[in-house]
Length: 551
Image 1 (tube, rainbow, N blue to C red):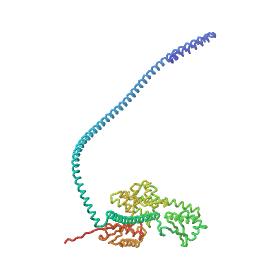
Image 2: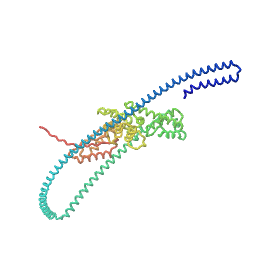
Image 3: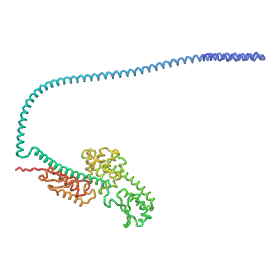
Image 4: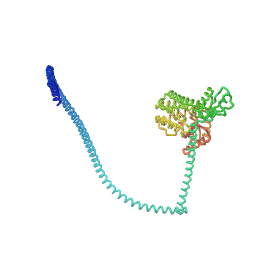
């Protein structure tokens, strides 16, 4: 259709022009030369139109051939794509079919194995049943023989029972004649004697239970008191509860107190300590049981005096600033301690608690120095035993961090430290060593035992805690005297800095039954008559020695 339009369009245009010029020629008839020129022009136009139509037809044919070729190529490509798709689908289905065949073959093989196994099992069961049947037949024969023998023995037993009953009756009559008591009266007396003996034994047992319960209650109550003392570390000594601040002149005392005491009240409210301004020349006393608060108060007071502006607003500003600086200092101190000990990967909360150890003490012993010493001791012992020295050192350093936790949280410091370590994702062995170093929980690893031993070594050695050598010697001497005061004790030795008393008894005077009671009595007397930190182990030793001489 498009090809025909291309051909007819020039022809129509030529005819229109020819008609126009012929009309113009017929109507005007005025200028023949012009008409001739128009004819020539029309002829030329017609010839041009013919030539253009021929070219257009040629181009259209060529374009049609190209379109046919493209269509053939597209059909060939489409055919190839479809063939490829069909081949892919065939290959996929073939693979799937092969897999299903393999699975079915595998299942068949497994089923065959199961059937074979079941067949073997049935054969074994069958053979076992055959053997069982044979045994049952044999057992039936033996049973018949034994029943016959039992019948004979039963007849003999009946005759013997009759004889024994006659003998017993005769003996019973003789006993009644000799004792002058009837059978019922004898039974009644026997029952009464048994009941009295049972009552006496029950009374002794109840008394023993009461004594053991009392000793255990005393031990637990004293342990609770010791834990509370260790948590608060409120030693009743001036050196650990007050700080003395030197000032340049006594005139500053009035400025520190302020008008009607407003400055000193504001300072005490902001720091939580007591400020004592007395007649001591050029000195004021800062009193408080929390060393960290006392340090905040001391530094804040020094800065206020140096600044000269002492009023409630300035006091609050300085105290808040100093508190932030000291907290940052605690973190730096904790990081420095960890670097010095070669410990890495510690949670930030634990680092802060390590820094707080600097401002805590127990029985006059600085907790940070004590914990560092325990860490080194535990690490050395672990290395000697072939254990993880780094883990033991880490557990030793962190074992007392529960003492630095806020006092408003109740519980023994070992358990509090265990909970913090567990929350901060410390290793379970380290958590157990922290929680078990005072036996509040079972020990699960040798490192826990090493930390407890290192803690005892660091805390119990002479001079580690605030106790003069005279008091220390007197305490050990009294400990040995109390143990020696009991009958049957041969020798006593106070060892481990007074944490254990070893009692050697005389083998002839103390037996195995009274040895345990002696240990309990010595421990009870030590609890009543002595004051001491921690606990004391009473170890009673009884040994038997045989001596002979070769001549």
